[in-house]
Length: 137
Image 1 (cartoon, rainbow, N blue to C red):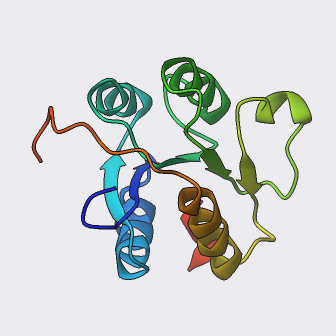
Image 2 (image 1 turned 90 degrees about the horizontal axis):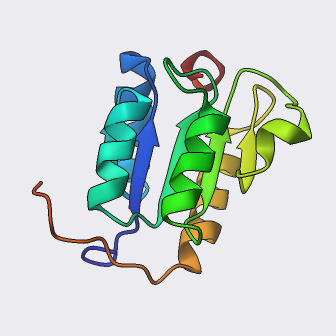
């Protein structure tokens, strides 16, 4: 946490969704870092220890579930949430995911779960490196 704000890595290849939700999350008190693709997310994950990772399900190169597995292998205690346009995903796609929010989920529920999962985290980010809802998935 930086200045009592949970550090969140948000990974989404849709620039409009990334900008919109990052702005919403910052307004809700999170410090948000964004990545446009899984490779950028993995670079961030090697340099920082986030309090939460939020992934889109559909990503280029690696799927959201594949990226979740790679991040969990680096930082097993970091909660990972996934957003998707699917109301339900197969359990095999959620093995490394702590919470899934589909098209039938509300933004309020998403933020509340982010707060719950980061509230139990006391992880500090390393200082090695400087610096509409259904349509957004």
